[in-house]
Image: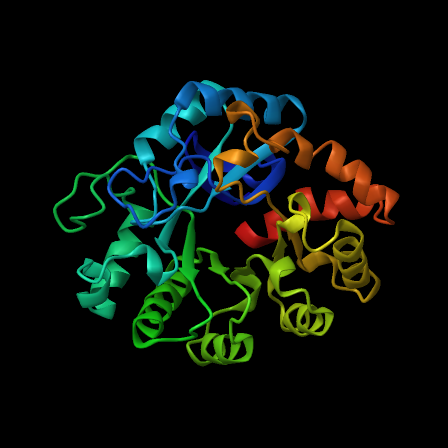
Length: 314
């Protein structure tokens, strides 16, 4: 069976359990003031306590979605994972461009250089010093998912370069990719370019779909074979009943195999250990109960949490 690289070593797809496919276990903004202050959480013991509660409540692996230069700290991720024994899947790639200063090497690196950097993070180990990718020591932990951050400004030349590099790595290594989106993203332009560079939709998770609450968009993306990641269930907008109806409609239309759930707890205020809400445990306890009250079934939820993540990483 296919093995997935995690902070606890390689594990099989059947060992992933209920996967939170997009979260931020550690965000270290020490060297990046472009990251909001509320996004800084590096208290190992506190965070480990929330991960232990997540695991005790039935949670499985977590995908940490902070890639190169956007708060990733591999040593801290490994430490919190070892304490909690929750496997964390590490991401490589890049977040939205606003996280990177104009002098960052991302802007001057060639496509071939980006391919080399991203490939080696997946095959040799994650960079420890992300500011110096060609001289840094490496962790023994390998990334197992790529990331591209797309904002409302659409596909700039730098984003074209990033996607070109990610497409090459995906096709060479079979590693999946997540795409950060937000309101105003020109989805048609993005999908057209992904087609152009031959990115397989079955290996792509399009994130934050609840922010662009558009049933026609959902259907179009699912029909093409993309995974749709929803993490707005913990937020006041859109209302949970409307979001649940959209998700149920996807199942009714035969696209249930495209749906993924996540927490996306970038803010400290979402973490129980910092006195916030709703906390990781909510995702696999009260949220499931609320969604079943709104028409989703246990079978649907198992498909979302257990079965669909396996297909992303297969």
